[in-house]
Length: 137
Image (cartoon, rainbow, N blue to C red; front, side, top):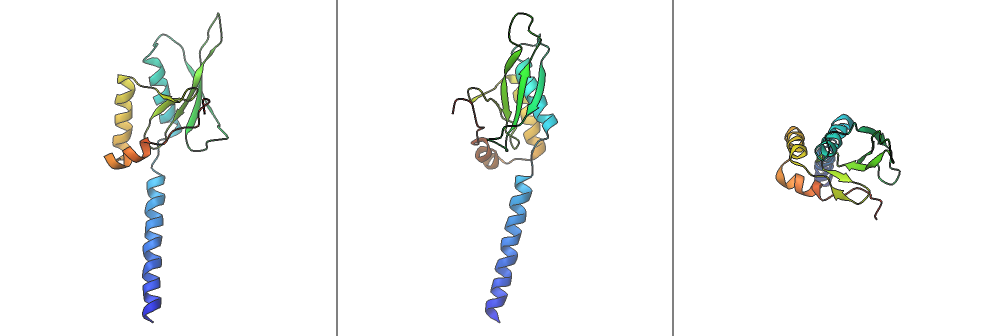
């Protein structure tokens, strides 16, 4: 009798941990927010471009959100680059070379996203370590 009560409590405890883990894993930004972060990261470096972003699927990475950026270049390639967004932190990467995209205005947007997600510093640090699949790997 005692053993079944212990097993029942253990089962309920594990079920609670699983549901907490699922809730934690589901706190992500939307694809619209991710697109806005990439756009801001690009515009901060050259605000004169008419940038077009297309969300693309990366069959090697179903976790990060990937975007292809282009602009109407009359004398060359319209391709600006490929970008990936960490859906838990809002970190933006140039997925061609795996380098983070950084700017002061992007940082402000990322801070707002992180505040909305209510990430604690230790959670952010752990999630920040995740990197996208990049062309250089």
